Image (cartoon, rainbow, N blue to C red; front, side, top):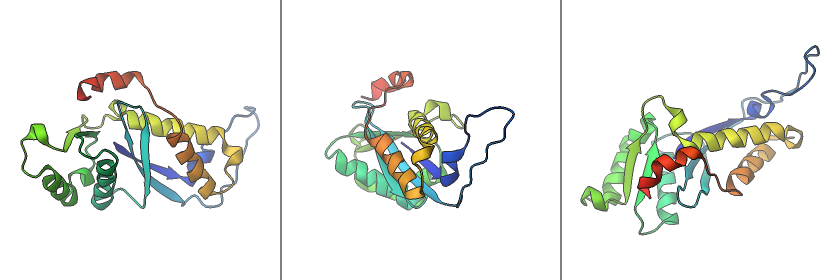
Length: 173
């Protein structure tokens, strides 16, 4: 699980052209921004993604509840980075409530933290990079930020993601 911050300017990060000619692309509003929470299901290779206003404790709990609804009565292992809001009071209270003083082997949510400053361990980073690269290649379709957001969700929702690094998490299944 991780968060991805999509900026309107991400679409036009670069273009290919002749090296001796400067190519400029006008961007009307670089301040448009969308935060996505995403989780990669290691068993099905499907990506679950939802839009939020920002990354914070409240939105983290909201996304965990979405995972809970999507996988009722199943144990869920969340592997994520050490973002401060992953350790927030809201998240701790939610986890305490759903895990309800059960033995750790019976918790509904088990959270594992990646090594500090190691985004290369997180396959969700790869999904977001692929989605942003798709947007850059599809720049001619991106006439407005709502279209960019639609294309991002279309890309992440309509394929299965399988990376070699997923194999290192197979014991979690």
